[in-house]
Length: 234
Image (cartoon, rainbow, N blue to C red):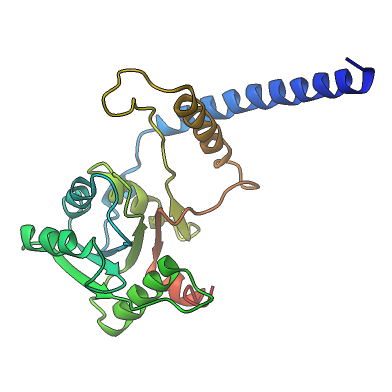
C-alpha cells in the first residue's frame, strides 16, 4: 500500500465516522422533537382539503394503499386521483376504490399524454391542479401523495396541523424504508438494511434549514400559498 492511498483511506474513514456520529446526534434530536405533545391549535386545525395522488401503472399492494388514502382520520377531504387515460392498468383499481367508498368525495382525472419535455407524473399533477381550479370545492389545503405511499390513519392531520401558523407555508413528510425479507424468505438482505440506515440518516438532516426540502410524495400547503407562489409555473 503506497502512502497516498493509505492517507486517502484514513481520510475517508474519518469522514465516514464523523458523518455516522452526526447522523446519530441528528436522529436523537429528531426523536426528541417527535415526542413533543401536539398543541391544541395543531390538533384543532383541520380545514377542508384535497388529497392529490398521481398514478402510472400498478404499484405493489395498490389496493391497500388506496384503502389507506380513502379512510384517513380527517373530517372533510376530497380525493383526486389522476391517470393518463382509461387504458392505464391502475384505472380499474381506482374506479373500484371510488365505488367502495361512496361517502368520500372523489374524482378521477384523465390527464392525457405528457408532452415531449414533461414527465407523466408532473403532467398528471398539473392536470389535477387545473381540475381543482375549474371545479373549486372550497378546499383550503392541497395535500400531495405518491401512489406507493402507505400512510397511517393520522397522516393527513399530522401534515396539515402545522399550517395553523402563518409562518409555515409548506409541510412535508418523508419516506421510511422498513427492511423486509423477500417473498419466500425469512432473511432480510444486507442491501435492504443498508438502504434503511441511509434513509433514516437523511431524515435527521431535514430538521436543519440548510438541508430541508419538501418531498412531493408527502406534502401539504394552503391553497392560497400554492396560488400565490404560482405552483403550476414552478
